[in-house]
Amino acid sequence: MKKKYGILTLLLSQLLLPACVEEFEANVGQAEEDCLVVEGNIVSDSTVVFYLSRTVPIVKNEENEGRFDSYKEVTATVAVTGSDGQRWEGRSLGEGAYSVEVGTLDPEEEYCLVVKYNDEFYTSTPQRPLAPTGIERLSFKQAPSGGDVTIHVTVEERRSDEVEYYQWIYEEDWEVRSEYPSDVLYEYAQKRVVNYDKPPYAQGWCYVLNGKIQVGTSNVYEGQHVVDKLLQTIPSTDDRISHLYCFRVTQRNLSREEYEYLQLRAKLDSEMGGLFTPQPSELPTNITCRDAGRKVIGYVGCNMGVAHARLFIDTKEVIYQKEVNCALATHLIGSPYDNYMAGYNIAYEAAGVYYWARKECVDVRSMDADPNGRPEWWPNPYLYK
Image (tube, rainbow, N blue to C red; front, side, top):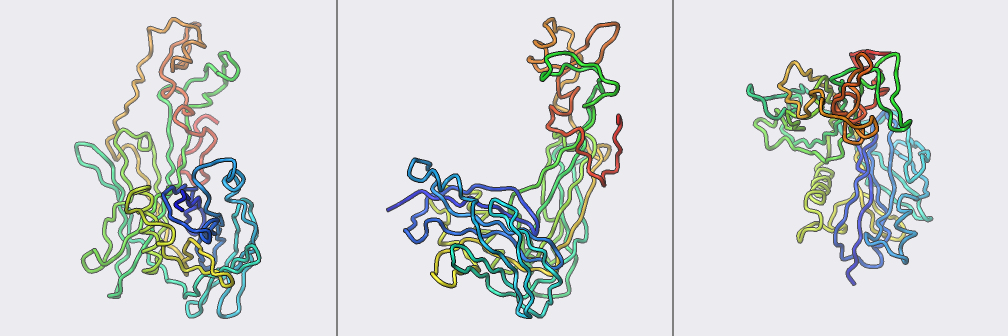
């Protein structure tokens, strides 16, 4: 019997990544229903998070509604153990998340994840932790005439002929500022014009944690030196480069088997539902159910550490082409409420007259920015605090 099942799970770095829902036709039998899904990695001297979930039917109906809504409600015990007798117990964070404070790993010992769920034990294959490879540089490029801004990573050159495999996970922070730092605004929640002592929404910050799987291997580069691997592309019209942008990347070394697992996961993302989309039973895994032989989905890596790098891009270093027209609107004759609903807000007030502009030119919240979201390490201070 052919049923439609999906993996609802979380793709992680050594810490955290956002949820990603996978949907595809899977010819599964009774034994593969409610498969345990495990995501996370063991990293030396780190607080790592493992996420446990279950495969559930994609089509929601009365028969499976309870299972569909509770796919992350996995109550288990989680621990990282070593062949040297070390053991680090996990702590539940709720919704299938378990935090483990991993101590110092020994590169000559082997470590695994042990999960007890529904009175059955699931164990990842014991493995020695991989040593990290450093990042030589992060760089960006843009044609002199403008166009997309691209961000590239170069890995530290190695002295070994062995093929290395990598995963890159990145975070993005950027600052935006309004064209008009207005201290008088129409506030929709209050249904009135409000006067402020200082412009409250003229500066803000945005944050994104990228959930796309990005992996690579050294054997496709000359001398096995990964140079200028493309990680991100930003259109020249994007607000991310309108003022100050920061790209933060984490690089993790992979075993060949984990690299192949992540490649197939990426294939699932890009070819969802296609004729040749891999099925759950085709995904490689290093996790087994010791007792009942139940199918498990996931792959647990093991690392001595990871490499980090950060890149700032100032708008003065690139060609930014603002798409929103911030000219003052002289044709608005409606009430403040009507003008607001038409997509405008007050740019400034002079002699009792309100001058209006597009919301994106007045209020950074219209650009999904948080006026109070400045990271502690951000180089620019609050302008109007």
